[in-house]
Image (cartoon, rainbow, N blue to C red; front, side):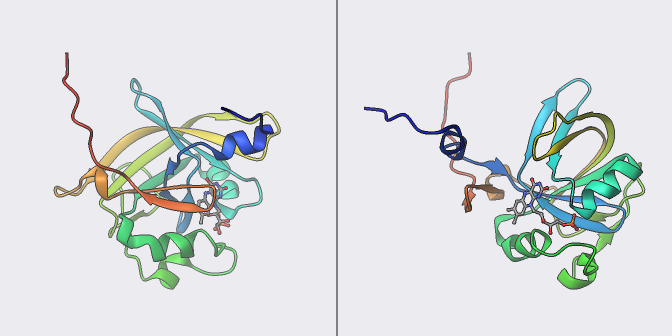
Length: 171
Ligand SMILES: Cc1cc2nc3c(=O)[nH]c(=O)nc-3n(C[C@H](O)[C@H](O)[C@H](O)COP(=O)(O)O)c2cc1C
């Protein structure tokens, strides 16, 4: 039997969201408010709280990089999600290697198996906690050994590994 809960508790029952590292200029920020937006054009979206340095930087530069960390890069994810670029240079702090992209000026992360270069095409903000920046993917850099099952998910203060593939007959 189901019990009625308040809306905030309802939201916490969502299984999880992929953890990514958002780069703008030379700053890195951990984000779990991240989603697919459109196949054509290929767009993703990321939700940023206005007080973050990342918010200021995306608003100004109109671009961002998305680097997908592996589950064994959890320590780096934690650091980029707890230190602000206003306090420290996170490339220096984490020892991550900055990587130049093809299209955007913002740096990408060499050690992450996937990096996407995005240009902001739209923003959504109706006065909630996050402003959503929709970015069109202009270039993608993917490690040849990359598999999605080594990625991290996060929600409600819990990290999870992406689970096993369920074989389903394709019609
Ligand atoms: C797992 C995890 C997920 C996070 N997701 C988001 C997010 O989606 N949006 C956001 O604004 N902050 C998120 N944060 C918090 C920021 O990463 C954190 O406040 C960071 O220090 C901001 O850095 P900046 O000031 O350099 O932009 C998350 C933190 C963690 C640890």
